[in-house]
Image (cartoon, chains in turn cyan, green):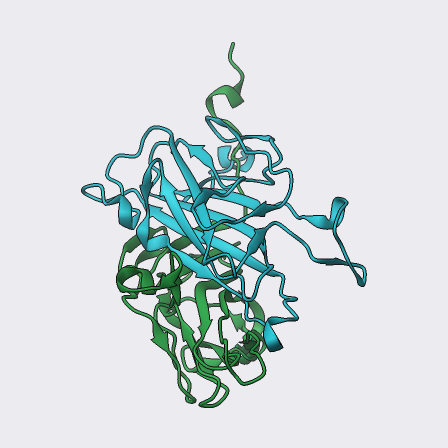
Length: 195
Length: 194
C-alpha cells in the first residue's frame, strides 16, 4: 500500500513570505493578500537643492501575518551631470525619516572638472525589523506594523554645481544620447517579507 | 463530496530553504537552521594597506539540511579617502580565500589626485556550491557543509595614496556629514537553496 505522502507530499517551508518586485511603470503587482500599484516613472528626474520624492520609489505595503522583517530595495541609475554629482538620499516610512538608512552617492570628476562621464548605479537598501518591543522608526524598528505604510525615498543634490539626474543614460551605441527611448532607464523596486 | 485536495492540498514548494537578511545593527534573526546574531556596525571603517576584516561582513553559518547552494551577499557603502580609492576585497570561508570572489573597486580623480569624491554602493557576493564531490574551497565548492563555518570579507587599499573606506558618507544635505549621518549600516544576506 502506498503512503499518503507519496501523493501529497509534506510541504516544504522557509521563512520567505512574499516578494513584490517590479519596474515602476504604473503596473499592479499581486501579492498574496494584496495588490500593489507601483508608481509610473516616465523619464529623467533632475535633483534640486531641496529634497523631493524619488518618483518610482514609493509603495504602500501591508505586511502579512507573521512578518518579522521587510526588505526594501530600490535600484536606480544616476548620472552626475555636474562635477561629481554629489547627491543625498533619505528613506521614509509614512512621514518619518529612517535616519539610519541615509546614504550619499557621488562619482568623481575628471581633470579640470571636465570628462564627467560617470553613469552609475545607486541603491537604497534597508531591512525593517518588525519584532521590536516599541517603535523606533528612525532606526527602522516597529512593534506593530499591520496596516499599510508608505515607504519612499527623497533625494537632493549637494548644490547647483553638483547637478545629478536619476534614471538618465548619457550614451548609447558609441554616441551621446539626448532623446529617444535610450535616454533613461527604469529603476527596479523590490519589497520582500520574511518571517 | 469534497475533493481530497480540498482538505489536503498538494504541497507548494520552491528551492529557497531560508533567508537570513538584516541590517548589521546587532539584531538576532531566527530561521529554520538556527539563530544568528548579525554584527553591529557603529562607524565608518577606513582601510589601510594591509588586509583587515570588513566590519559587518562576518557570519558563522550552518546551512539547513538539503542545502545545495548558499548565497552570501554583503551590501555596503564604499567611498574613497584618497585619489581614486583603489581597493581590494577578498572573501573567506573560515581561513580559506574564495579566489573567484575577489573584486576591486575604484573611482576616479582629477589631475592632481584631488577631488576624491567617489561614494558608491558596493557588493561582495558569491554562491557556494555544496554539491561537489570533494572540497575545493578556494573555488567555493564543498562536498557538504554541515557544521558552522564563518564567511567574511577582507579589504585593503592599493597603497597609502589610495585609501578607501567602508560604510562612510562624506556629505549630508549640502555640507560635510556629521554624527549618525557619517555612516550607513551594511546589509548582510544569506540565502540557502535546495
